[in-house]
Amino acid sequence: MKIEVGQRFDFEVDREDVELIEEGSIIATWYHMGNPIYVELSVNKTLMGEIRRVFRDNNKKNILVSIFRISQKKYIITPTVVLVNRQMGGINQIK
Image (cartoon, rainbow, N blue to C red; front, side, top):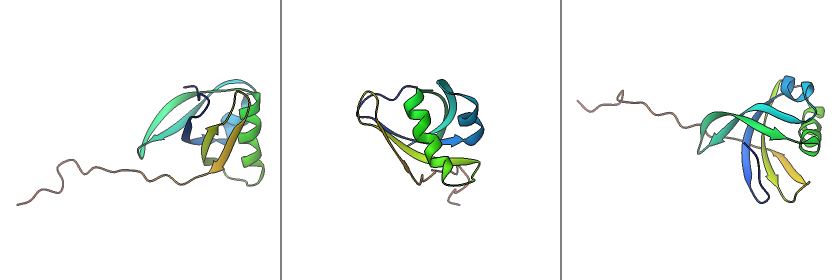
């Protein structure tokens, strides 16, 4: 998955993935309408630097971030909150 200029996505990123790679792709959890989807996120040096900056301020194993690409080489990364939808699938039936 590649983030194009003007797009914003919410991801969960693991610290281990960020520390092991400089450029290429990482496995991240993309939250689309509250539902988690595992994706291979394309990253460049600029994006990796921004993600590492968020990890530098804490000692968490993973973080939830909103990534907004504002130009070809600039990103805005902010901590975020994701609401996860859970469907009960027939459990709540009327008797």
